Figure 1 (cartoon, rainbow, N blue to C red):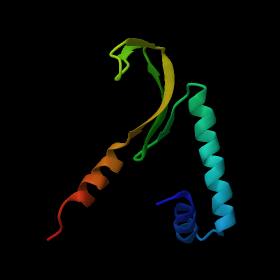
Figure 2 (tube, rainbow, N blue to C red):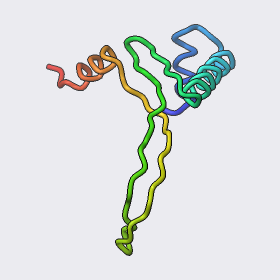
Figure 3 (tube, rainbow, N blue to C red):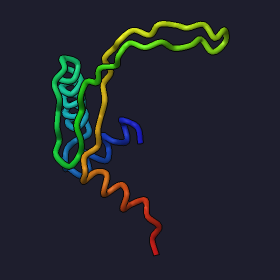
Amino acid sequence: MNKFELIQTAAIRANFTQAAMKRALEAIISVIIDTVSIGERIELRGFGIFYRDKRSPRVGRNPHTGEEVPIPARNKPAFAPGKEFCEITEEMSKPRR
């Protein structure tokens, strides 16, 4: 599912116009990006947690030459699914009789 299909489906479920749903989704995404980028977490109970993960510096290798390459520390966005989300996903992946 892409962003357009998500907007269409959510608009139908929420009884919104597609334009209103697009604005709402873009606002939510913007808030998530802004909040996580400053190091705060967003916790949506049952769905999951958006957070910033600190990656330590390390030494990698160039696959062509085998030469060691320093990889600096960095921050990256991360998502940890919630318990309910995991349970539903697991249940839906089981074969039906």
